[in-house]
Image (cartoon, rainbow, N blue to C red; front, side):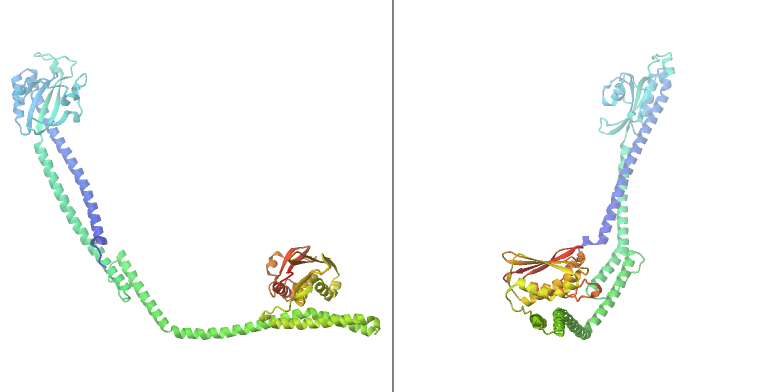
Length: 527
């Protein structure tokens, strides 16, 4: 891409520095010319004052003796000096009494004019005028620029005590000596100096600008050109390119950093290139490692799943097997004591329970085996009261051993709903066993069953120690237990939660505190 000339840094620096130099020199030239003009004008005014003072001192003796012809000759002679335009003496009334131009003698001037107003505007003519009020610049009749200077003639003692004429002692000013000087020579000097200064400023500006341009080209443009070339080479992929800038300034340090960066980029590029060439080999090696790790993880998961299944089977079979064992012992005890017919019905009842619980054990094993297939079991119309009573009879020995009082509240004699009775029984037994185990020192276990148009609501309330707030979100998770010394497997409530979910119901902790816990189960009448 072609770079525009005005976008170059070196040219910008040259233009900016030259512009600043020109501005400074212009200000200096203006101040110098102004001061020169003021000094020359002041010198011209001083010259005029000196001439007027010479005339005044030379004519003093003639004025005291009233020698008018001598006074006129003095003024006329001095008026012929180079640079003197005219010399005049005015009295206090504005009349020209003497002049180097004889035609002006006897004429008067307007005392109210701008040149005279500075003195005649006051009641008395001032004896001491400020320097700037004694000088005036104007053009004469020939159109030439002239300088006029007024030198007051004071009323000295010799003047008012002289015998030849008399002036009142209280009058300070008798008249003024007006000398007019041409400023042509001064103007020419100022003009020549202005031209010389401007010429010198232009020459100096050009020389300094050229010097600045040469230095910037040597110290800035050339190194920047090399650095720009190096950047372009780097962008094109030439990482071996080195910038040759031999200086200790910032640009030299920049070139060194650039060369160092290019070297590191070249090294990194070669490493990436080498790594990319061996990437396939490394990927294959990593794939083999991942396969081995995956095989190990699968094996670990199989073992973990087997452990979970074993724990679940052991936990779920424990309750019915315990009932079977209990009633087997009771049957054995009854038969050992006697074989009276009176105990025949009781033995049959216990044997029936043993058969039912053995059947439930088989059902549990079957459900666990079919769990991976998500089978929902056999649903039929059942009486929930019968399921609850059967569950209570199976855990009755737990109730008696723990000295727990059972209190039942049924708002109806029967509650019909469509469900899998064995799984609902399993869920109730799990919740009831948890409630019994939470009351190690005894208490009251309350069962409350109500219904509305669509659901049956079961509340199971214990008087245990309650569930901690931080544990509530996890109680339905598998293998999570709050029992001391990890006596529980943590599967009871999780299995119950799954059973209730299969029946499109809900289970939750309605209330818990140090006074006890209430579990709320909602089962739809029709699924």
